[in-house]
Length: 275
Length: 291
Image (cartoon, rainbow over all chains, first blue to last red; front, side):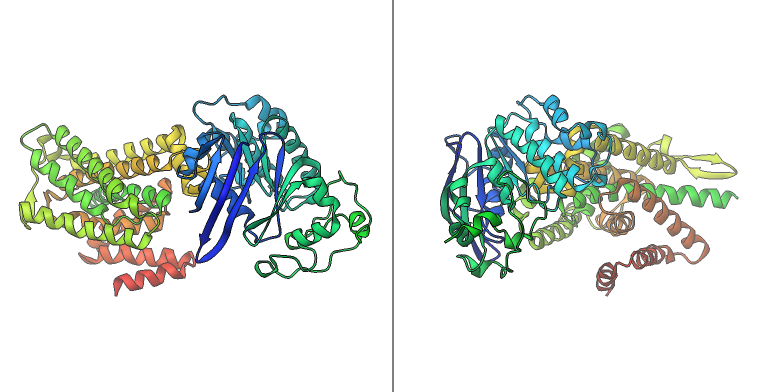
């Protein structure tokens, strides 16, 4: 296992957000971290990176890292593309990438510019003037620039247009061929396309682990865990609205009209098969 | 005409002094969100370092010592007192306010409360005739120093990796660390740069005023803050323009309106700028400070 969390707790502003999270990330492929809004997915990611105070044990590549500071953890080989991207708006594309260059690592500019030719064309442009999709490309490019042993990508398709979602999905698929990935994502079609293993959080605890395909094939379980109807963790998330009706969605298709994050639903075809 | 020239150059000289203080303040606040009320004490420390050495060693060495004193003291303060308090901003402010009071008190305890005359070297003591005005040479030195510092800061920020880290850190500190960068090193460096500039300001301020006193730094710091607020936190160009403007307005008001009104004018401009920006919070803070 490349990353292992054991009994990780996080308390923020008096709320006990993570209540003993334990799971591991396989050294190959994509592990999806799933769950409804507000269950602690982003906090889990931040706990791994030491961006929030946490207790418990975190091993990366077999070594404990929970006592290290964020920059020390990252230098061990983690690339991080945060929720909301966190690119440096006033800096140019070149400067954003240069800042991500880590000492002691080769810098894969060839790969980055092959995956994102647009970034080369816009290298001198301030990142704040790019579109949301292009900013997400910068955020992902930063993780691919160095020799990382794991990349952590938090909601890469949030707020992006459907066409851009497809582009991001293709890039993540290529990235996943090279380096293991921990992916937080609400778009279940994307999760189905990329992820092998899935970890589901509810109310700050892991409530399910296993292959993503099996989870998503089980409509009742998906509904219970990921928040359609009354599910566990209801108390920490806003009330869900009824799932929209619509035609069936191909298992590998990217959901065109993303639903708001609080009402992720399984594909309609699967749901109609439910007992 | 000669009065106009003299007032302009004296105002720009004063503005240069403000810039040396404000540029450090602005960098420190921009990157670290630290309102460094101890910055004036660093100016005083630099002034006294220069005063102690002037007459014994070449003046350039005295200036270098002032810069080194400011930088070393600032790095020490950041590492020992500010660093443990990054998660407690209120305590951090209290610590810098405390230092801002304690260090001048210490200086007063050692060298007395009276102003000490700073004998500038002959090259700086004279005047230069320009368009009919006899302008003290030190005004030109101050303006030149500010221009050199402005250029050096811009080069540092735009051309060096640390400059890149500082610019990125001003936007999103946490993300800088999440790229594997030890942002604390940049903090200490920025604090030391600010301290070095404060030390330089102290030495050159001693030349400008002809003397050094324990409270000199603190009185200059007030205008440093005025300049930073007008110019913009973390914006070196804006701070340079604001410093020149405040220095000029102060001089012209003191001469044409009434002596002493210049300080009032500087604060009045601050209020106008804040109001123009629609910054109600800032105006409230200002009123609280004045009250």
